[in-house]
Amino acid sequence: MEAGGVADSVLSGACVLFTLGMFSTGLSDLRHMQRTRSVDSIQFLPFLTTDVNNLGWLSYGVLKGDGTLIIVNAVGAVLQTLYILAYLHYSPQKHAVLLQTAALLGVLLLGYGYFWLLVPELEARLQQLGLFCSVFTISMYLSPLADLAKIIQTKSTQRLSFSLTIATLLSSTSWSIYGFRLRDPYITVPNLPGILTSLIRLGLFCKYPPEHDRKYHRLLQT
Image (cartoon, rainbow, N blue to C red):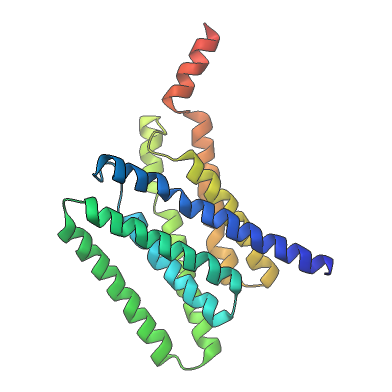
């Protein structure tokens, strides 16, 4: 196998590994829901938006014939659907959860109808679907900025997940390089905000370490 082919295989494997690692961070929320039989302190919307994002990129991967995109987003969609079903099972506000799910799935179905029925040309469909997925992914990466402002105000990173931050940084970086290798801006560009927001979160962890880390440092100083 040529050096370029080996590099592409390694990069593809890194995309799969890091992205599935990012998706699997939700397993801790799943265990929490099963243990406490409640959804306290767990947000539902990230599960739903990530599921829709996975389904969008899965369609793009199928249209493009990209096995890496297909594998990652197929597994991601299954995991996010599992999280959604668990949240629905343990949530006392099932009507609101179902309403949000139906609304976003309705938007997704309208999008599918538009791309597959009203855009018959394959290249145009690929470009428009890629643009839609890119914008949706960018909005997901930028949406936590309001939480980052609250963290700066409270000087506490308790609401942040360090493992998710690292997984997002590695995943976004690998996908940006992967898109660059394929010369596909629809893959490269939307992952750049993921790198940026992950670096901002790491900076906040350094500036405002979790409470147990601060206690540890105070003990070392005494």
